[in-house]
Length: 374
Image 1: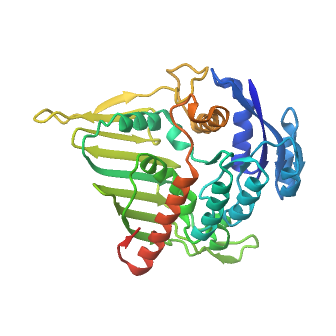
Image 2 (image 1 turned 135 degrees about the vertical axis):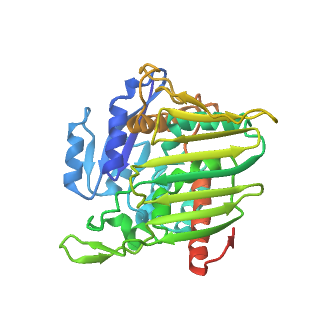
């Protein structure tokens, strides 16, 4: 069993999810590599206090330079606001550490280009972007279906990531609602990789985009109760053309009734498939023969995803399982390279860079109310 020693920069929500996944690594049935968290950095000492419960206890610091000076740290998970991505990701790579970074890999296209230059300068390092939703069993089923070419000629693809936490206008402001920290992309930068990971993985590259961006709640209460500008798009609807078919991408923070819902639907002449985490055990597939019936087949999915676990196949799969599966893919690729055992690797820097080109064009499209070529 190879142990990879990790540092975490940004110990908030997703840092804790990684720590939880690492703590229950024995849940995975057949892995020859595991993570150990040896150093955690966050600017807020109150956030760091949570990590004192880990065994063995990691070193804790408020200066990310201390973490990169730690010789034990081999790889870094970086989960910080978007405006810090370029400085931190480049520094992590220049320090010779493998990196799994949060989306969108830079606050804007220029920041992403800086990161991509550092990635190109360090081909010896594994660099991947966090994106866990395709590791749901339904996501893996869609990936296998696409790889097998069961669609025939693809007619249309729809991919969405939806939640409704911002429907409440009195919800306090946070950094994801401020362009200074989140970037002008707004919901696209925050949620877009969820919607684009699967299409980009299978070569569905847009040639153009017509975007409708909605700033639904223009201001929210600040820490002292005074109203603060909420100057990023809450919702984005992107209608794109690939070489052969339309691709519809939606990212929404105000989608009434939705709770972190991932949707992927593919219509084809020979077959169609649909999956959503709203009904996470349900996969819908239609196989069509000319002249035959057009009938959806419904399959109940179990718990198993890309990497076998000790959980019986009849039980349910959840978000924490998807996080662990994503980390299993990262460590599998880190340990085995091109010979990785699992069927689906994490989102690549190139896929993250492609989202930046799409989102930048979407901003231009919304301003001009026009179709923009990529």
